[in-house]
Amino acid sequence: APGEILEVTGPSGSGKTTLLRLVHGQLRPNRAEVWVKGRGLHRWWRRGLGRIRREVAFVYQEQRLLPRLTALENLVFAMQISDPEMPHRMIRRQALDALESLSLGHRRRAYPHQLSAGERQRVAVARALSGRPRVLLADEPLASIDEDNGQIVMRLPEDAAANGMAAIVATPHPTFAAHRELRLPPCRPPGHRALSRPPRTALRAHPLPRRH
Image 1 (cartoon, rainbow, N blue to C red):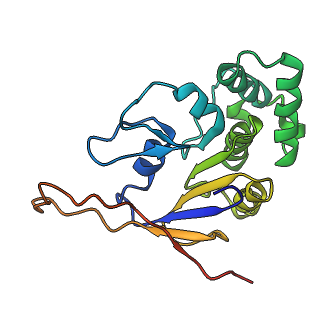
Image 2 (cartoon, rainbow, N blue to C red):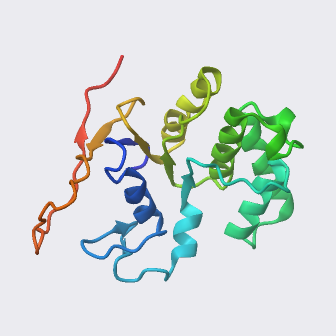
């Protein structure tokens, strides 16, 4: 829901990244159903994904920055692909605002190899925020970054929720000030016999007590 943070937790291999990629339309489910903004992606996969991608942003673990573009150019390029009709001046302004919001304005001309791991992760976060999406998906955004950068990224879901976005964050353990938590069980061991027809049930997150 708008303004809400959902934290998806579970051990490595439990399917956290897969779940986020399904919501983003990167993968097509081979069973069960995936609904995003009233659209059944399991039925019409690839159709209308452009609109969903404009409204649902993804922060990858591995950042996926283009090495020959500066930090600012990475954001501008992503926004041009997402919304080709947006005026260049507006794209550049929103990209700069996103970098400034993560204390990266002074690094806008730096290339990825000139940035630290933490700075690259923050650029990836800024890229996701620059399009001002309605839903933010973040796949273990604290992985491989130091404490100082981690403190900046930690505020990301709360700031997104305060601005009316819905945020879904995948982490191994409860970490963020989430409203709800969805715990995924460990991956089944090889040889485990699954049900031939799984029950038609939805994954439901349970609310968490508010943290003070």
